[in-house]
Every structure is written in C-alpha cells, then in structure tokens.
Amino acid sequence: MEIFKAIIEHINYIAAATLFVIGLYTVLTHSNLLKKVIGINIMETSIFLFFVSIGYVSGGGSPIISLGGERQIFINPVPSALILTGIVVAVSITAYSLSLIIKLHETYGTIDMDEIMELRGEKN
Amino acid sequence: MNVIHFPVYIMLILLATAVLIPLIASKRFKSSVKEFIMGAFVVSWLLSFTTLRHVMSNGAYTYSFGNWSQKIGIQFLVDEFSSFMTLIILTVAFLVIIYSLKDMEHEIKDYQFSSYYTLIFLLLFSMVGLTITNDMFNMYVFMEILSITSCGIISIKHKKENFLAAMRYLILSAIGSLSVLLGIALLYMVTGHLNMFEVSNVISQVWQSYPTNILVSLGFMVSGFAIKAAVFPLHIWLPDAHSSAPTPSSALLSGLVVKVYIFAVAKILYRIIGVEIVDALGIPTYLTYFAALGMIMGSVFAIGQKDIKRMLAYSSVAQIGYIFMGLGLATVQGFSAALFHIVSHALLKTALFLSAGAIIYQKDKRDLRELNGIGYEMPITMMVFTIAAFGMIGIPGINGFMSKIYLSLAVIDVKKYVYLLIILISSFLNAMYYLPIIISAFLKESEDRKNIMVMDKLPKTMIYPMVIVALGCILMGFFPQIIMNVIERAVPSFLLIGK
Image (cartoon, rainbow over the protein chains, first blue to last red):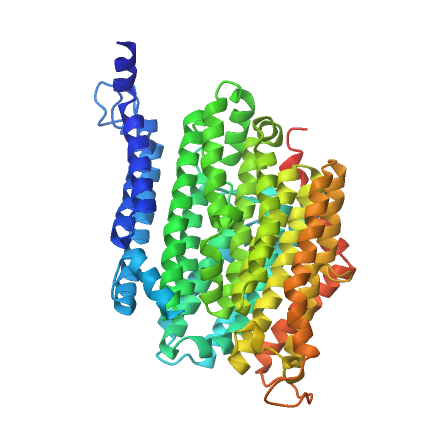
C-alpha cells in the first residue's frame, strides 16, 4: 500500500516523466515532420506540468491575499509565472517549425523525413 | 551618465535597432539604413568597451532590475568575464556585419535585407543577454530567442538545403533547450531559487542530501547544452546548418553562437554547482572523454569533405573539442586555455568563413578540387585563409598556437599525458586537410588561366573585415598577454568561488 500511496502523491511527477519520454520517443522515431513537432509540443507540456507541480502546496490557495479567504497557506506563484513565458516560447517555436514545414513541402513535395533524404540521395 | 547602466543600454540598443530596421527600411535597402545599422553598432560597441574598462578598474557588480531583491528579481552580473565576452561578441559581429552588407546581395533578395538584419540584431541581443544574465530562467528565454533566430538566419536563403538544415537544427535545439529547462526545474525543486548566487549558496549547503537530484539535473542540462554547442556525438546538425547558411551567418554561427552556449554550460557547472561538487559527481572527466573523441573525429570527418564550407564546419566540431577539453580539466589553467581558445577560434573561424565566402562570391566555386591557382587570382583572400589555417594547425606566431600551448600546459599540469598526444594528433589531422588547400591555391596551376598575379575583385567592405580579423589573429599570436590578462582576472569568478 505504501507504493500506491507514493504513486498517488507523486502522480504529477510520474505523469510529467511519462509525457517527456513519450514526446522524446515521438520526435526521435517518427519520420513525419508534423509528428516530430507534435512530439516537441508533448515534451514542452510535460515540462510545464513538472514545473507547475513543483510550485503546488497541498491545501494552498491562490496567492492573492484578499481573495485567498480563510486560508493561511498559498501555492508558490513563481513557477506558474515562469510557465507563462515558457508557453509563449513554445508557441513561437511551433509556429516557426510549422512555417518551415510548409516551405519544405513546397520545395520537396513531401513532409516525410525519410522521403526527403531519399530525394536528396538521388540527386547526389 | 552612470556606467553601471551601460550593459542594459547595449541590449536596449540592439533590441530597438532590430525593431526599427523593418520600419525605416523601404522596399530597397538604402545606404541610409546601412549607416543607421552601423551607427547603432558603433554606439553599442563603445558602451561595451566602456563597461569593460569600468569593470577592470572598479571590479564586478550586479545589476538588479527595478531594485527587486535578488531572490525574486532578474539580475545581471557584469564582471570581467561577461563584459569581456560581450566585447568580443560585438567586435567579431561588427566585422562580420560590415562584410555582410555586400556579400548578402549575392545570397538573398533585396526585400529580405531588412528581415535579415532584424534577425542578426535579435541574435546579438540574445547572445549578449545569455552571456551577462545571472538568472537561470532568463537564461532559458535568451537561449530560445537565440535558437529561433539562428535557425532564421539559416533559412532566410530560400534553398532546399537551407530549409532542411534549419528544420533539423530547430528540432535538435528544441530538444536541447527542453532538457535544459527540465534541468532548471530539477534545480529549482532542490533550491527554490532561480538566481545563480542564491542557487549556488543553497546547493553548497544541501548537495549531500540530494546528490541524485543534482546529478539528474546536471545530466539534462549538460546534454542539452552539448546538443546546442555541438559536442562530438551530438554534432549532427552542425555541418548542414553551417555549410548551407549564407556566409556571414555561418561565420556568426560558428564563431560566436556555439561559444555562447559554452559560456552557459561553464556558468552552470562551475558557478552554480561549484567545482568541488561537479568533481565529486565526476562530470568534468566525462566531458574530457567526449572532447578528446571530438577533437579526433571532427578532423577525420573534415578530411573527407569536398565542399569548403562543410569542411570548415567539421573543423568547428574538432575545435569545440579543444574548448571542452579545457573546461573539463576543471583547473585554472585549463579554464583559461578554454576561454583563450574561445576567443582565438572566434577570430580564426571568422577569418576562414569570410575568406571562403569571398571565394564563393568572386569565383562561385565551393569545391575544394577546383581551387587550383586561386592564390594568384585572389591573393588577399588566400593570404587571410592561409593565416587562419596556419592558426588552426598551430604554427607559431598565430593565436591558435598560443591556445594549444596553454591547453597543453594545462594538460601537463594535471598529468593526463594521453590528452597531450590527442592534441598533437588532432593538430596533424588539421594540417592534413588545411595544407592541401593552401598548396593547391599557391603552388598548382589553374586549368583555364596562367598564374599571373592580379588583385582580388572584391568590394572594399569585404576585404577590410577579413584583413582586420587576420591581423587580429597575428596580434593575438604575438601578444597573447593582452587577452590573457583579462582572462586571468575572469577565471577566479568561476573556479575559486568557494576557496
């Protein structure tokens, strides 16, 4: 029962680690560029989950003193604020990579990395 | 004017120029816009020079934004290291940008000029920020700006290879920066701070309670930075990216961008975690293994290349090995050798890429086998190339020789004589792929014309930057103390903090 309790207590971290591995696996194994980008997004989400979980204090309220009500403990607001910046960065990376994929599709006619490598190999 | 604000002014000028360029540039890129760019550059260079002089005479200081305490606010650390490296970044970038004003006409279309210089200024902004910041999350943000803009200056040339190289670089550097972010999160979990001073304070007290956590976090951060700095087994993106990019971009990417990530990894290893803890965890030793592997393999790959820029890119992989070797020794001498080599490689690789770009500009030849007799058609360019190539091989009188001497002395100091042999082998391998180019350029006869000496048919704005960089290499080779004096004052802020 101890193990179950530990798992339930740390479910956020376990989920974050699992998502990170899923994302990394997707980026490394799939040859479709769109899937690679989605994999990067999954990795980003996992880290955001991880970061926000660090700041969580069980039973804590939102860190606004007048709206916190009766509560005396608050969650740590810094990780949440950092993750807002992180989300912006993630969106810009996604936007840029999607635009690159459009350009690659225009020039090579495919968004599959393996096929692109074949096309390049034939040319050489 | 208060000098302590100057680092912030530098970054503000770079950022504001980046925003202003597309606003003031109309469809054609007029010379007034060029003057504006160079003016902004000169001002920020002067500011950075004044900052360095101030720091050298009055000592390091921290700059807290909005006077928040360092526990919650963002902080800049302006010390000998960061102000000196800012000056190096701006100096090299200044020369490359003068060169690029003419060379880029060959590479991209007219209407793209304003976006190119916007990207360049954002790139410089993030490099200066990454060097000077003292906050871990701030470092991550600058890193992401840097990775997007450096992919941008590759893909701005609308060619097939550029899109593919940029895409690869983007995916790998996204993985790299995400691992760095995960490492930062793990460190934040242990310490509850993001400011580097606070983190290192807490870690030096509690590290024995959380060795696994720190080890995992360092593993993520070091491998993330290793992807971005192209340490040997993780270098696969570099040759494509650096060879297909427009020449000024390749010079910036190879000379500066890769180095900035090395600054960041040095900060994390030696300033945040501290040399004793890192040594106890055994990380520097592994760094030297990979560095030694890279020094050999980078050169071996370079020997087989036919394309001149691709060869230079593989040579970068080998040179990064030298720098990481110095870092991994974790001694004062090793670290100073690494910093010295960062500066000398920035100059040498810039000179090599600029002269290779000049050959492509005038003759439109990229293949190494077509360079017979080119020393008689482009004497100045090939002289610059020769000086820089001799520097890479380690001929005395050029800065590459001095950095090899420093590195060898540092290796002897820690009694790891195997690495001495590796430095020697790597130098011979360097000679194996640089000397044939020089020999065929000056001693072989070209097929379609007699070897009659003519001057280079290059615009003056392309010749002067190359010559200045080459003269800088020779100056640094004969008077290494100019650079070494500053480096010797910068190193203690990394390695001797606790002692």
